[in-house]
Image 1 (spheres, rainbow, N blue to C red):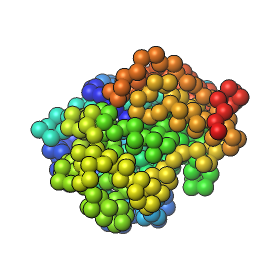
Image 2 (tube, rainbow, N blue to C red; image 1 turned 45 degrees about the vertical axis):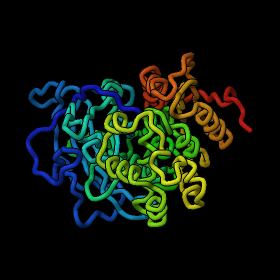
Image 3 (tube, one colour; image 1 turned 180 degrees about the vertical axis):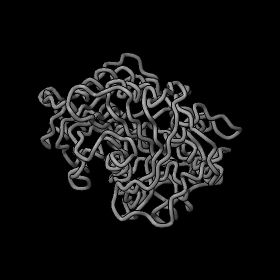
Length: 428
């Protein structure tokens, strides 16, 4: 969930017109949803080409990929049609393992809530520095690793992140899962894409991206059976929201608690009324600021602070949630593990993860196994706790990257996976 400063690798072509200012950043009008949306989920609404900063533009080829910013239709957890933005990357190298190029629908870790934090926008602006925002992306090496194998990649911005007019429903299980699946539906419609509706597809994500990948795996049979899903990589997913909101309080990512509640209140007047009743002036100010912030901003402003400073009673936001059945129910609805994925899954977590409890990921592994999943589970040993600094949450991502991508590539090539459920510790 922690996004550290790193230079992204993609920049936009041209100077688009402007729709709004967010966090001191002028958001291109590309991100304004049209007044009327298509009737079918996954329908491509608009697209525009962008160029890679560290790539090479030659006649007829872009290295390492041809990039296209996209907007497509999805449906949120309330049943409301929504526009979602993202970016599609067509590799310059060939996929040689089967006759048809496969697709990874990629979900990034926590980027924030301001529209300037959207992956497709960050991809076109290597480093964002204003008086209000400091942001960059660390997902590029992982994405480039997939492209180097000849795998096409589509990255969703999630519902409400990037597109103007609404806020990101952070870690809303249905919203993030559907955004991932509808991105896979939209990809074959991009001009120049070599993937088709019959291409093999894998989900791939870590942290919030892991939750989105896991949610997409659970939702796909009922929501998007037309997507030819064959596998999924799920890294450090927040599988138990009650535990996450408790453990995150006072860590480097305290701000994510605010993001979750803000996103839920957007669609629920009851939840908004609870926040209005319980937040003090400091809390109201923090929530207003968080709507404009990216991950680094929230770390700088609220990292290692307690949410008890945000409530009139002096209780934590987690304690406040426990007092309201509607909030408890809403939090519980975001948990993974009630539906078993029907395709092979690789699940990974660090043993000393100080943001997403390792025990929750291990329990998810057990739940999925009990539901009949074909699971490859990797518990990554970590010896030194980092006590809320997020380091042990971040490190398993690069540590597991090459093995995870090789595993995904094998599934996309049609190879069977070894089920390791017999080795997963049983859970009561």
